[in-house]
Length: 287
Image 1 (spheres, rainbow, N blue to C red):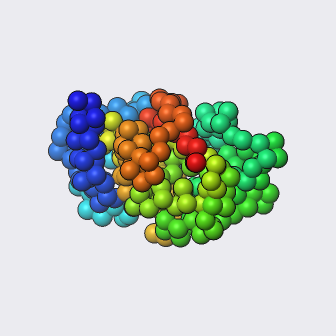
Image 2 (tube, rainbow, N blue to C red):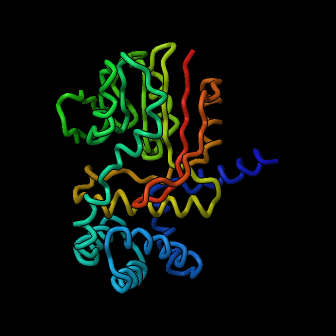
């Protein structure tokens, strides 16, 4: 009974999974008081965390849903340049402090020593740097080179192609990464393709179990990646295609592709105040 219910939610999510759906969600909030209240409550908590006053937060929420959203990129630019309270942006770096250590603590016990690790979607390489102990060599694979340190090797990702030879990495990690792909099934295949036999894949994914949670997750993922980390050039924008699944949905996908069940499957709950989303840890050991 549980699996059939999850499958139904999963199928609804798949129908809605496209970046264009963000326009539908944002405009739905304008017309649906219950949806608007849900999103504004989330915004209130996030903005208070960034240092806004109650009055500023309420004023900003009203402006956010005041007009119909016609074109996403232009609307994002308008919010950032004209509506976003600058104190919040200046507090962003402070609010993000310690995030890498927080994520690292969730999976560190599953790392192996003296291995070559590929961190898919590793961004600045802060988590990769934390993994560079116990004889590990760590490379970051991403669409752009955001590394802070040259000690971490960079691997260019083109679309869903990691660009490494088959079975090259001893261990692959991907944290909050798969849902940024427009075709996550292909990225999952790439993730497993580059790992050696007997290697390990460690995943932390943002998950959604209900349609309401899915809509909420889509919205906050957009806010975090497109507003808090705004990029003007289209090619620099982080993809937000709403490709979220439940934890069971990711497990079912990997079972279908490889016949594998996770060695570890753990509900991590919500552990980030700035991006209060539901996360799940999956560890796979390859035969």
